[in-house]
Length: 142
Image 1 (cartoon, rainbow, N blue to C red):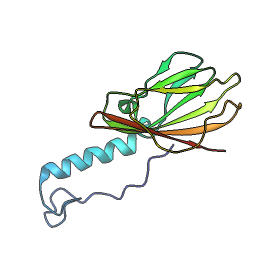
Image 2: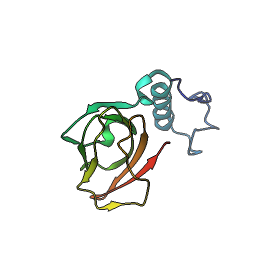
Image 3: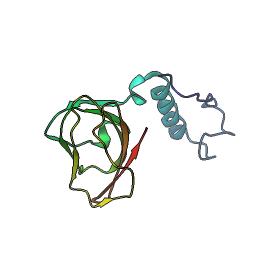
Image 4: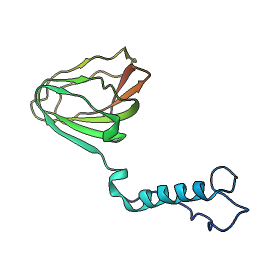
């Protein structure tokens, strides 16, 4: 997956224009230059973290694995809330023999779509964690 288009940053010696803040400091410029390098060169910035096929047990998706994550439902398993602060999207694809997915440790379930066990069905589970509270929302992609 290609990195998004990023317009070039101004030269560090140009004190009249500073990215993001309008203030002219070399530290801000160098920070933004590093972010630009990461976005342009690191293919993992936009990659989905793959939890693999799950047929049993507990999955605890963590924001530190990245915003986009995926797993294959190959049997009944539990998705547990994380202690980390942050948000993520977990894309679940039902494989052959998909089982029921249960949730554990969440403070809130927002109204969303029902999970199925039909092979090939896909879902995005939005997980929000902040201040010791965890919530989730399920959206069907079919």
